[in-house]
Image 1 (cartoon, rainbow, N blue to C red):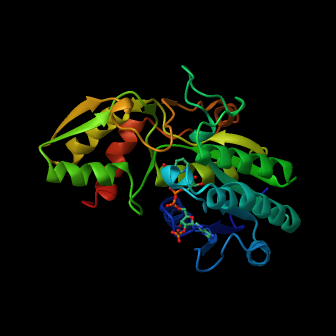
Image 2 (tube, helix red, strand yellow; image 1 turned 45 degrees about the vertical axis):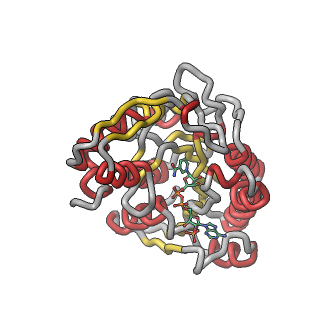
Length: 287
Ligand SMILES: NC(=O)c1ccc[n+]([C@@H]2O[C@H](COP(=O)([O-])OP(=O)(O)OC[C@H]3O[C@@H](n4cnc5c(N)ncnc54)[C@H](OP(=O)(O)O)[C@@H]3O)[C@@H](O)[C@H]2O)c1
């Protein structure tokens, strides 16, 4: 059990999620060490072991997140997403720290028609997804006290993300075409950070949890909300994935179920539309 006085370590603290997680932990009055890549290179096992010593909770936000680039840069993605999580997990096991490892909806193929339960067998369709799935396995096999938290469709104020791109384009163009045949759960990095704190505070058992907003929408629907919030006059129209070929295949159905944590009484993140209303000012920089 980690009490409020526990020492947190955030790896990858310079990223979109990492920065919000550090802010949220500080707002909760928690002791937190924010380790950016410059502070701790997670590919260096000795540096990792030094950093993890003395921590009660370690959150691994470091990853290779360039989904399309991973298709032609598999070795680098494998190192960050599959090999490093094993090193992090074994360092946590040896130090007696609880690990929160961040994973992704891309471990699934996206061909389902109902929300993916936490124990659905993985079936990645991209290099990125396959490396993240191997990272999950390395964490599970390590013997560490680990929570694997899968998230999806993240956006936040500290990183390039779908809302910031759409708002910029809507300011430059009269119309935008956005895919309407991929469904998911837009999730604010601050909400995910709060969810991680709730999971740890509730002392949930080691296992896999899904940290995404509730409900579902397409990128087209989300873009309509973003343009509405931005105040731009651009018209958003629907298009299809087939019209926008990308190196890595995208899951068509990225809706994750929340049964594991709800069964333990841990509150889910709210509905994606309500959460976007709460986030828009900060994420679009007009707060
Ligand atoms: N973004 C999404 O939509 C999404 C969806 C599902 C799951 N996820 C998962 O959520 C997690 C956080 O993603 P994010 O969106 O916050 O990504 P991000 O902004 O790209 O952050 C990743 C961080 O990892 C750091 N990093 C890379 N190599 C490192 C190394 N060798 N040592 C230390 N740090 C290193 C990066 O540092 P530099 O800035 O120096 O490169 C960056 O700060 C990842 O596990 C990702 O797979 C994200």
